Image (cartoon, rainbow, N blue to C red; front, side, top):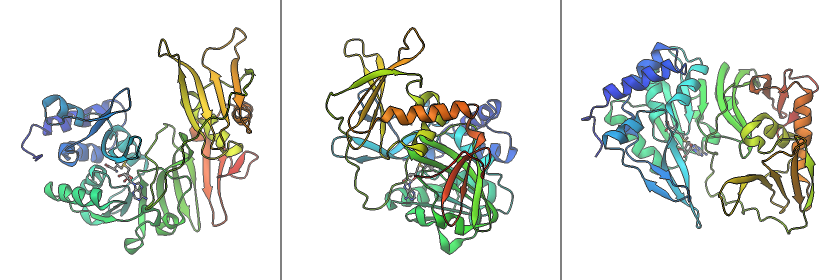
Length: 384
Ligand SMILES: C[S@@+](CC[C@H](N)C(=O)[O-])C[C@H]1O[C@@H](n2cnc3c(N)ncnc32)[C@H](O)[C@@H]1O
């Protein structure tokens, strides 16, 4: 049983100091919330994945375990069995990201906030410390997550409203909210969130149209539309799940009929040029593509980035550049996947290599569009 009877206050204070020193935290109210919240009570257990993909329980009760709890680390707290493997389905988001998000949400005294994705309840605890229990609402999909989170929050004297619910529908019975924060990613903004946001209210959500393809966007409601910019730092949240959803079949690469050529678009845009990867999804990559990596069987060093589509199409791009500063790419299957990345890379270069804050998003009753610089300019695309 995790208790308050451990030396956590100094660790929580040290975490708050560290987040402030790193520049993640500037608002004294959030600093006080971090220092006053016993994360070890809300995160009594967690799991870690080893190099082979196996999950192992972490010992969070030892002094080094507690140090880890009170550090800027994400802790995976719930796993689901996927037949061939286990997958993390809930976590306590790393506190540095959490406070950056809370600060950019521009929360003020008296605000009512809805969180999508209760998880451990840690973020709900920070919100409840800042605003008071009666102004904090949080939903998660599984009672197995929500009920223990409610109990743990109660054990530290916090009683926000927690509801087991598919967060895609928001929580209409307590709307309107001044702020909505989603801690799971969505391929498009659910209309219910706009409807439940007060006019002028802010919504912070991770929009991901494919694996790693997107970022956090801060949207303001103005009448029946939402609009705003992506945040400068990239973040990736667990994807929103839905009740009874079926697993997407794993992509199987097509045969070895590869066509090899050179490319000027650098490999692994999902790691190095994430805006390019996002634009590629908006401008032509088929949905459901998966990025990957190929290793040398002898040295186990990564040698190529791979992209695989549900139709079996495959692209393999060498990580080592040629002497001319290009890269070798081999495409196979019916869809020339790397062409879409090359087009996106070209477009990004032409637009002056924009970083995330130059990108924005507008949600209207008719559609959801991503744009560069200007919502009405030449560079805008509907979400796929
Ligand atoms: C990164 S965790 C949340 C972290 C949490 N805010 C915390 O402080 O511990 C993402 C959460 O989103 C939840 N989630 C996924 N799909 C959801 C859905 N459809 N509705 C509500 N929550 C969902 C997951 O169950 C998971 O707990």
